[in-house]
Length: 350
Image (cartoon, rainbow, N blue to C red; front, side, top):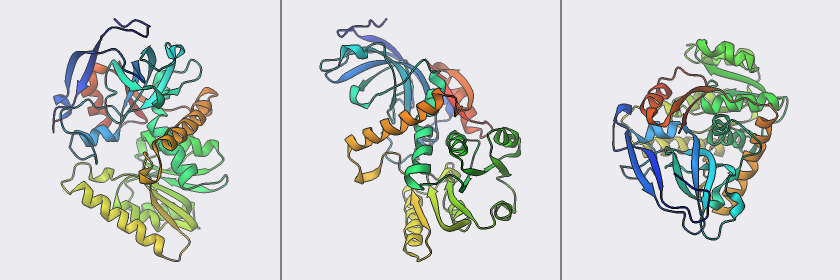
């Protein structure tokens, strides 16, 4: 049991281990003890962590920069600080916080650097906060920092029912932006309820249907599917429009080198930007790439997540939670997330 003191003893932790290239059933449950927080660290009791595309790619060994097996997955978390190490303010104990970890969050407790935490305002549902962490920040930054979409403009969101797509659509609609979203027909009613104009993502005449809704083209397109889809999206841009690519989901189960696929995508985006046609094409990197310092990254993350949490607090956006699973049911959670049948985010609740 964890005590709320600076000198907390070791803490019993349950965590999920990704041992190698496995099917979801191969995820392992491990119990061990964590030491007390070191200088600059805090101990966080995890209340929610998500199942994202990153974990799905990591179990296949197809996520760029993932660590060597075995490791504990978990890209982000929401939790409460239970103990602090030397050099950390005592009044952080008992504070609800959010953090982006990249790995390690599929656990009941984690040790994390205090300067990476973002305070969570008010008594918000941890699962809803979790849904606007990586997914929400990704959506916010692509919409406003990358594409710089303005009220009254029209955007195309591929996979508008997904974790990123559903939040992106809500942020845009709230900001007075028209949203055309692709998704399976079973999700269309839910998307209409959000103010999205849905189109069947599998329609053979998809481009023509989008053109019928936006004859002059869309002001921005957000595409996570890969190079083939990105090429089609680019042709749907209006004059001065922006294409933001942010993944290669269509190749998740492929055998091609992800590095080669990524380089081909970047080459295409670079070539388009050399053309004198007023369009912009870019790849969104959550971590900011080599141009942003760690301090600048943390500052930007706090600003954007705070904006999202404010929208969440006043009910301006409501993340869709597809399902909540106990931590020890991570295998079932992964199966559901990978089924591509759900609307919104699958969340683990330790």
